Image (cartoon, rainbow, N blue to C red; front, side, top):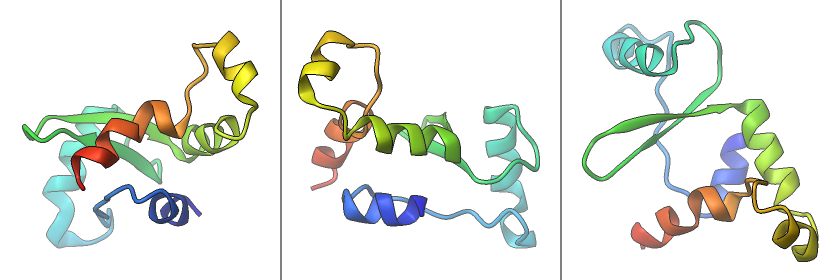
Length: 96
């Protein structure tokens, strides 16, 4: 489901298979960043300078998807509500 959201919103992504022995080092680096081991899926943002930030788990992406469908009046009154556009809007534009 999450990958379908990324695809539909044209958000670039890379999959790291945590069970693949060839990706073990990358997996462990990501676990160190998130502070969570063996909790899948995890989502990260990699900045153009190579810095990686933990974004959240599937629940976080689900909340972003749901909140993106809220009326604009609600979102303008509650600027603390995160949406796909707030999190990924400038990112998607930078990859075009």
